[in-house]
Length: 345
Image (cartoon, rainbow, N blue to C red; front, side):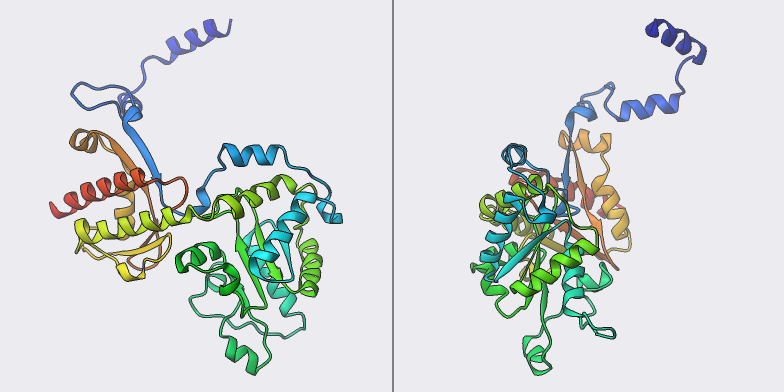
């Protein structure tokens, strides 16, 4: 019955407009010529952020089989184990699992700045100042002089530890507290960890409750975090290597349209500039993300490279577990294609 009504409706509507036909062809319908269908020849390399990672089969299995309890009562064994191991990782007395890095940093600030009128010192380029409307400070010697606590926004702490070849506890040893994300390069779908002294974490637990961060049977999420800090750390080296490979490609294929400081590429984040009057950073990102039949005809396939325009002429690209060396090579191929088009203008 439904198919009969559908056929009648289609007869009343008549043929689709030519514009719609072109749109559907662009999505993959075959055309005359030698180019393969776009739908079958397009791949996406998502470099906007390492927050876009997706849990793999092992992580999903760990989440599905996690032992759980009510974490608000401190009865979730998987959360408790994650917090225990995080405290050891940080070299601190205790740790707390929270839903997000923004909440983790806010909890830390609220615990350190408990008195009305307390002030927070941050750098003018600090992420917690620019993107979270509050944050943590550095400068241990200044802190000691004025008896100030030091909090580290260590979102990608493990990337730094791997790049430096040291334990994360070595990096945070001069800090009173730290917040580290599990949902970036470490590949968990949700969650961050706060580390600090036992009394600090006890206060943080109360603040987490006030902010609505109690998650009850959170062991399902904590199981992913446990896998992150055990199995996902060494592979961060792959992300760092692929990031540097793309940076070298910018210098080789895109200069002087694009430029980057290769010496500043240490982990999985690449910042580069678009310096050509013929194309703005936003237009460059749009062209890197766009797939045309011209591209498929020229190079045999289409590649969508997703990048994030930042401030001024700066563009950011971030590598993660869902971007392989092969994907990086495809992104470089797309870079060369876009740069060639710019140079022809």
